[in-house]
Length: 254
Ligand SMILES: Nc1ncnc2c1ncn2[C@@H]1O[C@H](COP(=O)(O)OP(=O)(O)OP(=O)(O)O)[C@@H](O)[C@H]1O
Ligand SMILES: O=c1ccn([C@@H]2O[C@H](COP(=O)(O)O)[C@@H](O)[C@H]2O)c(=O)[nH]1
Ligand SMILES: [Mg+2]
View 1 (cartoon, helix red, strand yellow):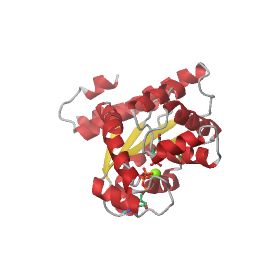
View 2 (cartoon, rainbow, N blue to C red; view 1 turned 60 degrees about the vertical axis):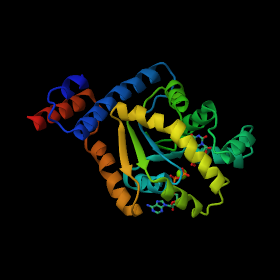
View 3 (cartoon, rainbow, N blue to C red; view 1 turned 90 degrees about the horizontal axis):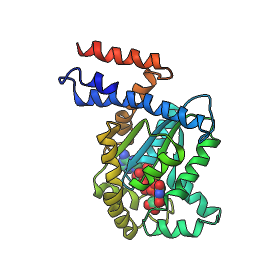
């Protein structure tokens, strides 16, 4: 259906098309969510989940902007890194393995991370999830889709120069075991090799919103705000809403 609408005119800007495709994908993923609920994979909730994946290199400013997104748009913030650090602090069975993996700048096995995210989603009363720093690898992505049974509605990517990311991480001063030059270099290599393919995957599906993550925190948020504001403006709870927004697109184009 969305492909038919999208092919009506080649003169529409690609960003507009990407936005439209994304809205239509929202419908696709909502119906997938409903199907998964029917199969009992995820607990039925009053509203279908709206999922944002927030990706970007170490120190690109994801966590900082999550605070603003939560304040403004009321998402539940799930930082994969924070969930893993909580496992270390609680000395859980996986704690020692997670600590070593983080010190090495490597990626924790998907099943461990996805289970932690799943638990938080199930415990939350919210239906809007801002999943920060995940999926880090294609295997993470596939594992999330298989276990949770839904795809993201929006994927945000913070594009930041390496020099700036290194500077920010070294100044962070939060006592993180991975905030040292040796681990940062490893994390940057892992990001390039394993996380960029995930970003490319979502770009090809028209779900990716890339932000140049340099400037002040407020300047960056002013680039982030319209992305979520657009989704707030058009609630997609029903098929009719969907058709209406598609119609608006067609009228806009003519
Ligand atoms: N726009 C900005 N300009 C300068 N410093 C910033 C900016 N945004 C965030 N910072 C600072 O950079 C550091 C890293 O930011 P943050 O923790 O939000 O990054 P992150 O993407 O979550 O990193 P990680 O993936 O390592 O968790 C923090 O000390 C934060 O205060
Ligand atoms: O999905 C994930 C997220 C994180 N990790 C590990 O944790 C650190 C820190 O993550 P931040 O998002 O920067 O807080 C990361 O370098 C990985 O080692 C992970 O394995 N999987
Ligand atoms: Mg962070």
